Structure formats: C-alpha cells, structure tokens
Length: 139
Image (cartoon, rainbow, N blue to C red):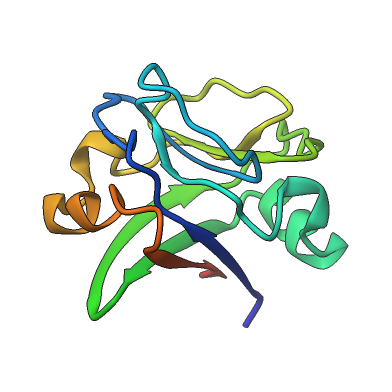
C-alpha cells in the first residue's frame, strides 16, 4: 500500500467554504481569501512526495485523503490522472473538477473544503491545532 503522511496546523483564518477545491500548504500564513485551505505549515508539498507515489497518481489510481484532527476523522476520495503535473514546492490542491495545474494533487474529488466535517473545520481555526493528512493509493 502506497501511503504518505502530511502534518500541518490550523489557523484562525481557516474558513473551508470553497465549493470545488481543498488545499494543504507549506505557507506559514493564511488570509481570509484562502477559503479552500484547511491547514498551513505542512511538512510536505507535492515535490516532497515519493516518485513511486506520484507515479501511481499519474497512472490514474484512486486516492483516499484521510483528515485527522484530535479524535475526529473525515475522508475524501479523488482520482489521479495521466495529465497530473505534480510539481509544486508548497501547495497541494484537491479538485472536484478535472482542472489540472502544477499544484493539483488529485481531481474528481467527492468533497471540497466546504464539504469537510464542520466540527473538524472549527478545530482547524486554532493555530495550536495539529492535523494529520494521510494520503493512501487505493488501487
């Protein structure tokens, strides 16, 4: 099983209201306009993922994204694509659409930021709150 774990933290400006994307970033700040961002100061960006993991995504494998905050968990299902670029230093974006740019981790997701469990989103509004994002290749 191919798996990557990303650790990041919340921020007072987390809103998670975007209708079509969700994002994790290595940036150390978040403005109120960043309504797709779930967490900041991630310890990995797309460029930090293993070559094997990126190859599986480019082969079109399905991706399970497990978001863990405290004892709460939410999951997002998305797909890889041969068109993925997977070349960005600090951001990972998961999209409901088929749109691809260098920051896109996966497409055709079943959830965007606004669909994430609101109890988790409330916890993510605390800068002290740590988050574990588990990325698992499913097939």
